[in-house]
Amino acid sequence: MPEKDQTMSDNSNIYWVEKYRPKQLDQLISHQNIINTLSKFIAENRLPHLLLYGPPGTGKTSTILACAQQLYSPQQMASMVLELNASDERGIDVVRGPILNFASTKAVFKSGFKLIILDECDAMTNDAQNALRRIMEKFSVNVRFCLICNYLSKIIPALQSRCTRFRFAPLSTSQIIPRVKYIVNEEQIKATDDGIKALIDLSDGDMRKVLNILQSTSAAFDEINEHNVYLCCGHPLKEDIENILNLILNKKFSSIYESIMEMKREKGLALQDIITDLHPYVNRIDFPTYLKIEILEKMANIEYQLSSGSSERLQLAALIGAFQTARDISQKS
Image (cartoon, rainbow, N blue to C red):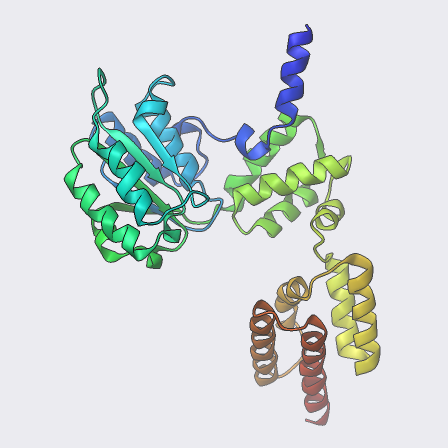
């Protein structure tokens, strides 16, 4: 009995992203065409070099790890699979050292090919990628490479042409909801429909982000509802955005500025999040189309300035100024 309690205690400390990571290809919840193709490759023992690309949290790493677990037994994994991440040094020395050594040696008493997984390989230097292409050609009988990246444009064309490419799109709402409900039931936590919708709205199709927010919110609150999810993330609530919009459209400049700054201080809001959530409301404002276009252009410029490290105070004033100018023009016309 004490051993069981100890196991349960250990499991409670595991990140849900790892705890609920699919172990087999048929457990993956999306990209059915890709899964079917990979399953056929494995069944016929003719897996090519792979290049999996797409946004974070869409199942790229989970897919290739599931493939590895179907190809090899648990005892074979250590000797047949080499996995390197962007946290490892990924210069030309690593390609000529550990990767070359692993690819050039055959596994004793084991048939089949080895598998080298290079996660986040868009962080590799061009020299390292150029060194890698020769290894892929020379040892293709002995080893298969799987390159995983977020940005295909950062992979040199020579590597792209040597791989079978699969794009992993962001997950849809219909794919995420059943998995979230399954985890909620397994973890025995309370979750409302608006709470699950808030998780999906904040994640933008990133399943890893969904699970991280879900785990954080469940640790901080007794119930997963919309208010608690937004509060846990420090994201502005819908009523906050509506209040800000009401201020911008009806109050004077100084009053708007002080009110929004006070709201930012009290709730720890970021101007970047405010702009992102304010954007859909612009289309609903009763302004002429050309004024809406001008506002959106100025909001885009403010967002760019923020990403470059500009002062939030200055950009908040610019945001208010953009709406004030549009208000004045609209009232005169």
